[in-house]
Length: 121
View 1 (cartoon, one colour):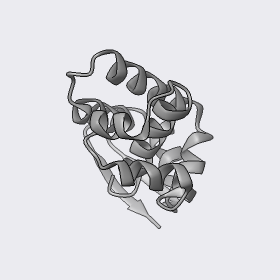
View 2: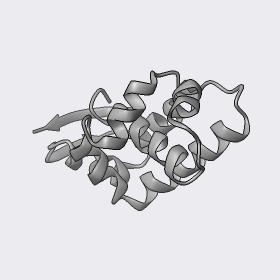
View 3: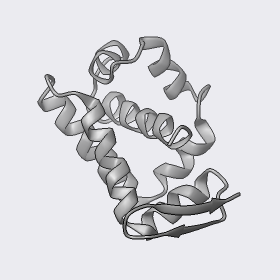
């Protein structure tokens, strides 16, 4: 998740700014990051390759849109809860997990109902 989560956060930030019209500062406050981080995400200076690939996965894009919408509408919510939801979704959806892992160069994965058994680069 150390490669995927920052890219997913960048995707949520990008949606907040570009599709919902939030300022970088407002998006940063909601996500609990600095405005500079949001600027890096939007300018492509941080995580651009993984972000671009994640955007191509329809289910990931759908989840990011839903998280952005809910965080904006319910500003008192902790974004960490939603990102934990992403982890759970990936854990329970082997097809989606495989698609996302390919983005970071993991070529194969074996999954049991309770956990990832192994991943190979």
